[in-house]
Image (cartoon, rainbow, N blue to C red; front, side, top):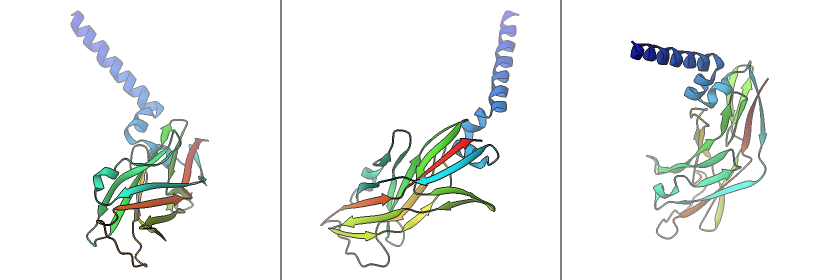
Amino acid sequence: MKKINFIKVIIISLGTILFILWISGLLNLWINGISVIANDVEGYQIQSYPVDGQYSVKIDLSDFDSNEGKVLYDDGENQIYVEKVLVNGNSEYEVSFRSSGTYSLRGATVVSGTEHAHTEYGFTMLNHVNATATYQGNSFKIYPSGSSGLNYQDGDSFGYYLFPHDKEIDVDIKKDAIIEVQLSNLYMNKWEKK
């Protein structure tokens, strides 16, 4: 009989804890992450502003996997690092960056190559980044290859083609496999409780 009562107490306790977490919003936040804060326009306001400085990372084109995790930006709470480097079907080199921020019921922050903004028509993503690359001593502008919304628990992703389409560049990995990517005008996206 004591064992049955003990099991009932545990079940009721777990149910109560889950109910409290659900009512408080913590359960939803734990499951869905930063997007819960960003999508709650009634409860949170967003401030977005550019981050000072230029940030760079060296990409090794001869060993794509060695680039994963290389840090481009880190302020102690927000980080941008290389998610992957690849060559797509058109023989175009791309780098994908992953942004990782912080979130709680009080608000959230993420520094990204994307400004997450609210408009009267809903949500939008704006790219303000100045992106350049240096390869074999030549510097040139590079262009976005894509971005995601706040699809990750703590942030988003964005990417760039490593070589521009509008400029002829001789890519010779045997001669030089390192390309340096420089990004400036990254954006701080900061949500605060209203």
